[in-house]
Length: 301
View: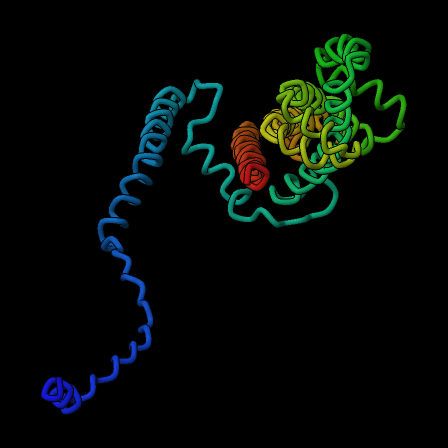
């Protein structure tokens, strides 16, 4: 026992446990990015796939138009003739000689200002009426038949009534835009409200949301795709209506420019103006569609 105790006492003391090292900083792994060259090539291919087919079709149409109308006996000018007759009008859209003798920019800007006022009024009133019809069975039964009758009236048929009521050309044109574009907004909004899932309404009832909260948090987000479908149709009808109305009310505007060119036998000016009208209508439709995509993405989030 004594020898054993001596051996134990002479044994070296156990070494202290090593202290744990401080944890090092975790570095994120580098994200592998695709090479820039293939990405640009893919984007170029997609852009070409979208742009080249319309350009080919347009070129074929212009060639066919040139061949059909190049004869001196043709009643319509060829594309080269149109370009030659309207070159000054095309390259200088900002001229202003007073009166109705203005460039394309001022003609289109005046028409767009009327469309902006009339379409904005139609959007506000149309969405409000659409929500009312969609939520109330009595409102739908009372107003829907009247709206179905009024929406079939052509835009120009409203112009004499509006002139008789307003006694001025400007508010009459705005009223024609309003009364023409409001119907698709009302109908699509009402359809969107009626298609709101019943579960959403049950949740609103359980949470005891106020009518304003129900509108802003449930009704409006759920009906955004329907509302913007109506707005896209409405903006197209607004642009159609103002062109037709301006032919009769006179003054500055692309519609009256077309009518004045017809009275002066300037067929080339009419063709160029029609191209401008189509391009502006295309841009307006795309702008409303882009706004709808942004708003729908925000509400879905």
